[in-house]
Amino acid sequence: MILPGSWAGLLEAFRPVFRRRATFVVFTVLATGMVARSGRRSVVGMLAGAGMAGRISFHAACRFFSAAVWDIDQLGLTAARLIVARLLSPDEPVIVVVDDTLFKRWGRKVHHAFWTHDGAAQGGNKIARGNRWVVAGIVVRLPLCTAPVCLPVLMRLWAGKGTTTPVELAAQLLGLLAGAFPDRVVHGVGDAAYHGTALLAPGVTWTTRLPANAALFGPPPTRTGRRGRPALKGRKLGRPAALAAAATWTRTEVYRYGQTETVDLAVIDCIWYGSFGNTLGRCVLVREPGSRKAYDLALFTLDPAAAPAQIVERYAVRWSIEPANAVGKQQMGVGQARNRVKNAVERTVPFGMIIQSLVIVWYATAGYHPDDTLARRLAQPWYRTKTEPSFEDMINKLRKTLIVARFTPISPGQPDPDQLHDYALACAAAAA
Image 1 (cartoon, rainbow, N blue to C red):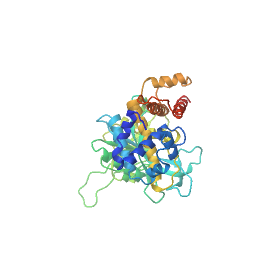
Image 2: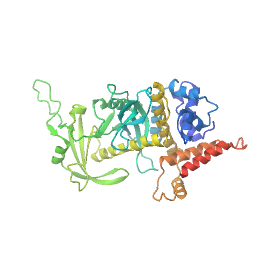
Image 3: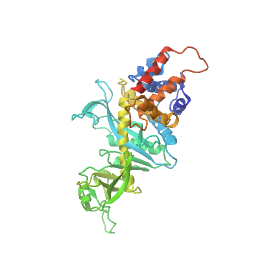
């Protein structure tokens, strides 16, 4: 299989993850096939996308996920190191966004498939059956995109009620990333569901949204010298609404969701005892100008060194994981493989999300050209306001690059009609 040097160089970084050369070869084939395939991304679909269905057996591809010796966490950490090395500056902190999402599955024998909450479901019924995954992604700012981009790197499968909670799974992922980057500060961000003492880890800060009924307390008082255990928390401050009524507001400019906006901010040092014990944190209240509410958004952070505007901006990038999950399901076909056994289920979905991140890394470092967006507007004039590439543009350009690499000047011969057909499909997908 002939690969372009830019794509092969990215995949070469993952060679140490696999003990056997043959396993790495199958990884290369499946990763390339998942990108090249425009149809269903089952295991057979990945082989067909790479054009290797007749050279690598279906059973060998299935054994790669179900029985081969390799660690999905090491695969994700290798992708994380690649992202940090190529897309972050040397002194830039690592911002990790955590969320959970459901990949729908059917069948009684599918490993850890349950009826559970599905936040992405349409309508009022937010219940579906499938595998619930906790996803951790690294947020990067690319010069070719106005909004921050989340690159998923690590995932954990929820095993059901009475087992490790999603918050504890998120803490495990944060600990892995903090250990991988001991020389960098790691900032974790999650929505209101992610709070608890499990997230207290050395070298990691955490920022989340405060629920309206959160009970907050002041900092613990100084020790009096009297006998008995010292107080773990100060006086009760009340809920966020009570803090907003007595707070001092400051008008500040913040950059969020791709634009600079003016908001009113209030900062209160406090303890969220019910979630983080007596660890001192800060409550940052946000109010939009002209709002009649006591506050519009309440945040809690364990980062005492960050300015209030930085906390608001940091929480705003949390949204980047939502389109990342949607892209994985809708455009990358993650979760379409119909496997059932433990190893295969726990590996296939993270594998697909990591390949999705590699597509963005490839495009940002080797594939981007300023004329890409112009060419898309010329081919599809209804995109009048399109000014930056989407993930569809990125993967389509990589597909064309993979197809072009098959035609080498060493053996000019007549091209395979199937290859010309694949190129036509890629061009049609780009124009759709």
